[in-house]
Length: 603
Image (tube, rainbow, N blue to C red; front, side, top):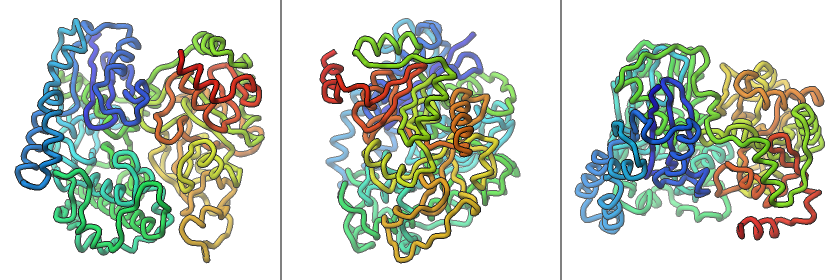
């Protein structure tokens, strides 16, 4: 049976994905191995894992597919610098040598990194890879596909149609006009890191008011009724500069860009609220136009903008579609999977089998570790642990959660994409009024305003949330039902003061606007996680838990047992559950976190 390897690299979130026939066999980001968040380097370790998972060597690959066309991207880079000359000379001198030395010679690099490989080397267009990643794993035989991100080669936003085993792009918006880069410009201005802090802007938006919305529409953005848009590039620096915006942008709003780690004042919250509403509006307009254009009743989303679950939910509510499917690794990492899928269906013309859920396997496509491997690791580093059977693990872990303990949950195959979906997760009790603050400040070491997601048993989701469909990949928001809300008023509270108000029976996962970014957990997709939440439900009557990714601020989600233990020892987590082993922080008195770091680093 044929194997196709997809690769993404050199922008952010490099990854590799492997297909065996029509089956998605493995997919993983390079950052999980290198421990460099959003690692953009060539995904050597990710490729090695994919081949190991399939138990093959490079000579068994039918094709290796790269997720964009480097020479077209290089053409756009040169064209931009020529257009804006002499501005951007320093950026040009920094970027061009890297491209000439490495980034455009992908074919040679693949041949060098995969000795013995004899198959074809193929290239997809960037947004073709995004569209393929969204449509082909979906349960739909035909669908509209919207892709939106910063930029690929030239395309920044596209409308495609997918029918059985074919894709066709029908509309596009081109660089420098980019919804993704517009959102990143405000991310930068709010003091967060571009290509990393966009989640923070989305989480910050409910604390503000969209008071700058009209200014943005009047000066920065011209949006048509069909969702097409153009930007006034006099305010932006990203086409050729080393910053996202310029002094003209600062003058427009009347206050300077926030410095990282500086206090969050109301104007930045209002900026976040304004750009979030504009993003919602544009994406809904594009979706409505796409439905009008095609008549299709189902929609798929991919590209970095599709990680904006608030905008996704607005499309679900207002776009006019009966069903929606969003690629869980919607950003550049998912481009590796899309490249492989595009080759299998578009290039090799293989037939596509209809599936009734999706073929993404819950996005649980990364490495797993056996109990033997975990126990060997624990013994090697003198970690005190308790070995239990599966039923005991589930029962004891659920009891720990009811006691307000914070649990690191390390099970099965690692998730592909930015969300922890129940295999590399930190779990807690959603009923606690103090848990959201505790998790942010003592476990995740991140900004206090960041919300946490609930993982809820699928059949009970509608008891707590107003949902229109399941949300298995944590890419949709839903409002908390009014019957479990507390009648509170934000007046006279402003900004982050709103954090101190308990808003519902599940305050740890209820955001200040009464929304939650939820994951619905299905018995067949992740049976162990489903059973754990069921145990918690039996004890408490609450069929959901807090689920946040198993990592701390600035680090990727944990991959290996050693990653998990390092994170556990470096935080105030109480319990670590790996496979059928339980490790309690209070019992590790012989090894404080500094001893652990020193010992592990030495090895």
